[in-house]
Length: 170
Image (cartoon, rainbow, N blue to C red; front, side, top):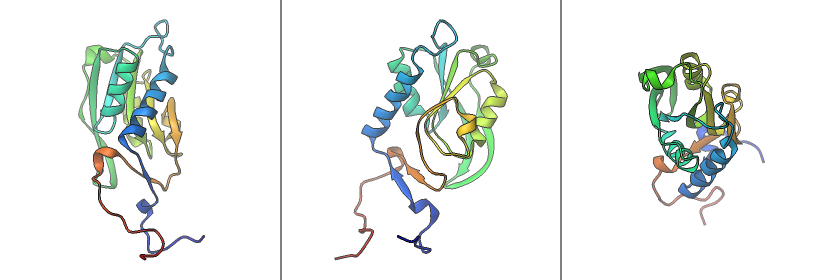
């Protein structure tokens, strides 16, 4: 089957349901369980907003981590990547150099967002649910790898609607 040149690159879509993100986030938690530097424990979870918030909540629940914070980094304008910029950082006294901190995001794409996080917190453990090849070097732990040209459609970005069949309209 040849590629259709009229299709946009992001039309190679990987649709994630709420059930799937929940299962995959729990799998991430199980992979991280007992891997922290303090006798296997983690001090806190930091979600990269906005996509990392649902997975971080699930990881924090599964690992019984009560200290949760966020870091807001803007690296997309709609579906276009731009320069990563920190909009809100987590509590400085909590973070230190990142030792014992789990940084959670839904996806690593180019790795630019996590590159910024790693510069700020070099000893943090960065974990994502999904990873693309360009971003994999920035992640310590992930669950599912996808090709660089795949666009992941997360459930918080979607609404149910009719979709034309891929082949034919009969």
